[in-house]
Length: 567
Image (cartoon, rainbow, N blue to C red; front, side):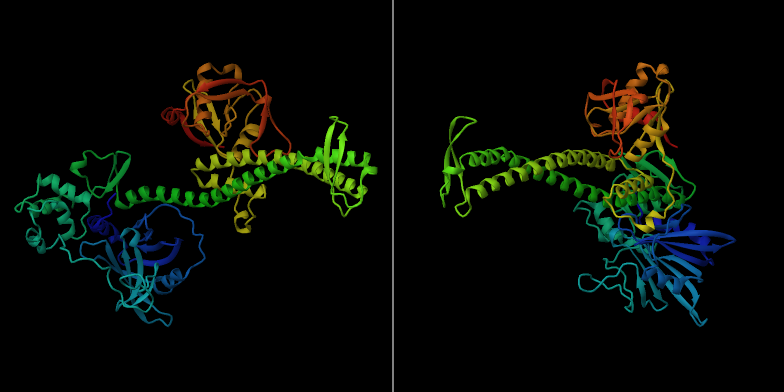
């Protein structure tokens, strides 16, 4: 990607539609992103402005966003000073990634005021700043204090531009002075150009160099002007190169034929960033639940270790029972204040020394050993039961951890949250519980013979697929003793061929913890032999009459089989 100064220059021509438009509403998507709803030229337009450290940009958007935020201070300031205002001018500062939007508005008593919305699209240093007409800061979406910054962005402070070395605007006559600033004998001419030209990205410079062949003192300025002239023909493009997507506002000869073209720059940015932004939100939401599950998993492992220690200690119970019995049998031999008693163990017919508490009578010493025996016996029974439950919990949480790695949609995050609430792992959030529950959607695939295959990616989907959606004569698949998804071929078993079985088994292996392994064992049986155990954890079933096949996951094959999601 290259959201450079040249891209900004091209984008502003597209935003001319907003000139003389009225800002009807401002809403906030997240801590760094806003939507301006503007009425202009008889139509409604949505201007997205983001100072996100990874997805900073501005453009018109047609995507739908949620607005979960209670109005924070910056949004309140923006609404106070900018809502109802008329956009007078949108201009780029030089060839930089800084833009000023001049807005004419009115204050509370109706007096006309002028406000300036400054956009600084500079990666992690991006910011959105509101000033008055004298560039006195009213607020910034990111505050910068003088303690650890070279400039201050706080209400009441005069706005100053980000500190950068003076550079040449390539669209002015000052470009002629560039050769005098470059040492052609030093090498790394491209880097020297970037250090002296405003708004150029390495991507654009490669196109200049491609046109020049190689840089000389005579061709460097003409090559830049030629490339800028060619770039005036705006045609948004997207390239897929070496697992990396690159977008630009015009085709680039050095990259060859574009993989995709767009009708507008905003359409390009909308598609490119929205998907990434949505995935980022999903990862962020899922990360909170993932950390909770990991804590529960670690707690369960510690519990298993502790219960193991209890069971090991309880193995001593029989010794204390024997002490009590022998002490009762030989009680007449105990003398006051004895610290031990040597007797013949009638179980082994060998001598045995029994420790005694000299402050207790023989009877009390015997009762002490019986009590200790009974206590350890009770602990052993309790620990054994708890250990079985703990191992079930560990298997359940291990399965959940695998499912968290496969989450791709917000609906799947919500399904995991509901499950964690149901299991008492997460406290119920009233605000989230009011959200309308979505229908369970399964992932659909088709075998090479045209049979439909459904896959559940979490416990809620697995339960729905196996216990409600599938019919008794459908074939059910699951990796053998490995956390993974439930997979069902939704056709009568009599119609299923061996190739269908192998492909469905491969899907089960692909959607399991063994997706990177070879020869993964997968069990399959008819749904009639799969049973949900009463009181068992979500996603847990037992099954019989199974057969096992060994398959190797193939992600490319999975991609060709995929059909999307279905109810």
